[in-house]
Picture 1 (cartoon, rainbow, N blue to C red):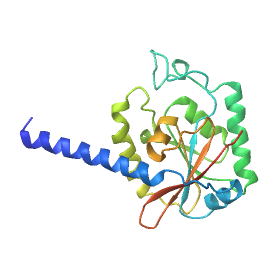
Picture 2 (picture 1 turned 90 degrees about the vertical axis):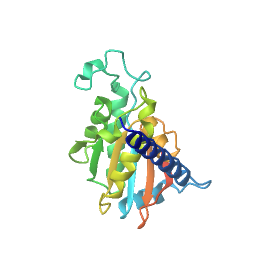
Picture 3 (picture 1 turned 60 degrees about the horizontal axis):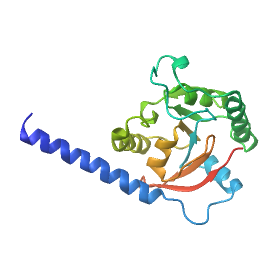
Picture 4 (picture 1 turned 120 degrees about the horizontal axis):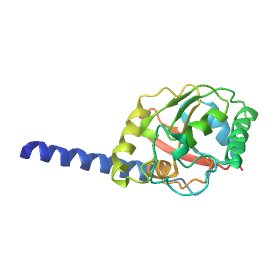
Length: 200
């Protein structure tokens, strides 16, 4: 590897880390979070999105034999978690959102949560995958997600189902299972957390 290529790689990593830190600082929620009704109103309006931590899935991380293609090797939703995901979908519909653009981590507990919402087709998005076991990937994945979000239409509700570590890295919020984090994207592309909705 040439010196220039090595130096270029270090610069790219530094920029990614700096950008992720800047996003975290911008997204730290203010002292007075909006009421739930205001947050649902915001999500129905253009320029907002929701980050959702998957439903209840007992345990931490994933088994040593974890296989992305084999749900039986993963930590999955419990019956309570599946019920929770369906209730979250019902909350969306009760607040006037019957359809949404749904993207999910490729982990089975996220895909199942997203499908049980009943708000439309679910599209896997690798940028939402957990980096709990690979914290060295945090900055790159956070950068990839912010870059992806910058190019998305927010004319209709956008819901991203992912993991606690991903949401915390992007927003500074530590959500409970099934908690929604509502984010506004300005015309300049700046993201800001406007509040959270506890769904249980």
